[in-house]
Length: 336
Image (cartoon, rainbow, N blue to C red; front, top):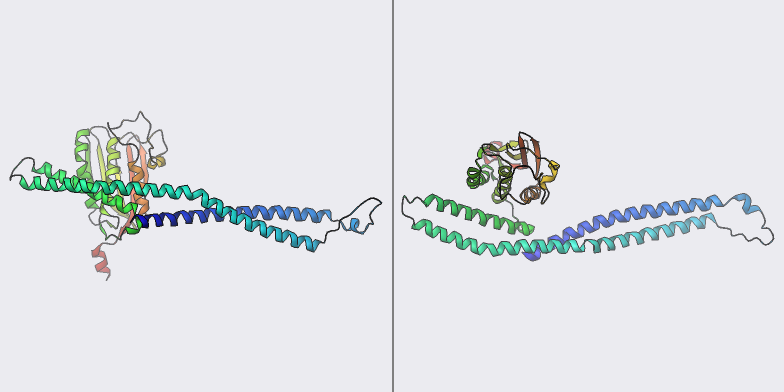
């Protein structure tokens, strides 16, 4: 697994190196050709026929240059200079992006190691909760709480598995189309406790027919991050509306809050890591560090989608994540 990830990183870094090196080579070559062209025309301008026909004066020395030979010399020097500039550009860019390759490798190793180390404790926790759940008598008031704890544990296990797949793109297999409403609904359910504590209502309006090939665990992570961000900026007594709908070829997940809007920062920058709005904007205690929305953009981009701020103002903010929609089995059957 790790070897395949390193090979993928190496191919990506080499492709970037070739692209940058080619651009530098073209720019260097253009400058060399321009310089040689200026020098060539300058020499031609200095070669006046009237001066060539005049005999040299006593003590004066003249050097005669054949224009054809000068042109050949300039062309040869130009070709060699362009070739040397191209080779040097490729060598320099390859050395320059080498730290990038090492950084990608370190990042993937960290994600893979951390995720792998979390799998066993989570599996043990899930097994213990399963034993506890089976041992509860019928009608026990804690049955629902234990069931929620086990569901949350399964969600964590899915997130860890999703991180392992993200760390190794070569192993990310094709996912069968599935409804978006399921993962989004689980995200709404898991954040219900935080919403109740904050005095915020969560309203889900999901079209059950909207399907996509984005893995359910990744969809739930995105929905969780978007809803958690909305809760962090929603005053008590307000509502956060979560929508799932289809718009043309896209499946769209929207999260709308009734907060004060995005201020103190360009709305497009909220998807950058560690980006935050103005400090005086009300936020839920213990809110995140500005990473969740960046992960949403990364996951959406990895599956051919995008995320953006579609509206913001004193009445609230709307975030929308778009991913390619998949054809439902019913539509496929009708087409056949």
